[in-house]
Length: 190
Ligand code: AMP
Image (cartoon, rainbow, N blue to C red; front, side, top):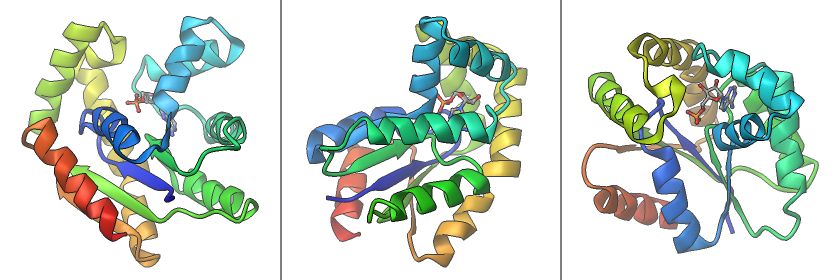
């Protein structure tokens, strides 16, 4: 089994595609955004802290995020493989993930980016905000700030994974099924 990172800007379709890949390959799916929202829903101290950042469209600090991610991996010792969705988002997180996995004799096999144009993403996110009620999807300024966070802090990871020969990308506009089929065939080659 493989450990895969799904990469891409907010709204690129990582969550939707991760669920389909989970079904197709049996991955354990870990979404740090979902974990934060779960904590917010349960009003945990973690959730209260995360919310203050998420509400502005800022990234949650690395220490908290890394700790939460590692705890979730540790909570799934039987997993044959993981699909990481929305993590890592900073170089510090990527380095921590590599070190953490190495300690378990595990590694990332591939990072696959879903490429979607920002204009299309704004429309998708505003629609998702209407459908789901997610507060960070309802305000264009917050959405733009999330893109700015991505461009500044997350985009450098493309070179990080390219340097390890682990970076792949797929054009992320089209039907969910078409994109899923492309991801499946890509995953079969890594
Ligand atoms: P997502 O559901 O992946 O779009 O994430 C929603 C929000 O959760 C982001 O805008 C961040 O505030 C926070 N978040 C999720 N994953 C991370 C991460 N790996 N590092 C820092 N913040 C994160």
